Image (cartoon, rainbow, N blue to C red; front, side):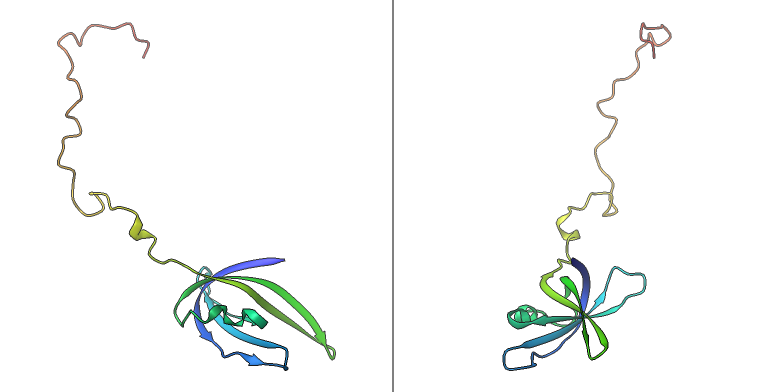
Length: 130
């Protein structure tokens, strides 16, 4: 089962070699879409340890992860196993052109310029039902 969450990088830890053939790396994000922000720790393993190398604290990311659980000596552990990380573009509003009204200006053209004036026979009924 796959999940995703957006957040701001709080901490990126160094790669740890757990055994000769297994390495892991943790990183923490602060969720940005929650009413009460949460600090969430993810784990990267093996060849995925390098996917956070290009990021630094404060960067906004979208993290794709799997939920993993296991038992060891009668204790149960849960892990958020990250498998993909994407940068979130924060300047989306810059691509939307500002309208004159949003800049505090008003249009200079007359919006009623091409509206026809009523004729002198306004008192006569026409055959339109409305």
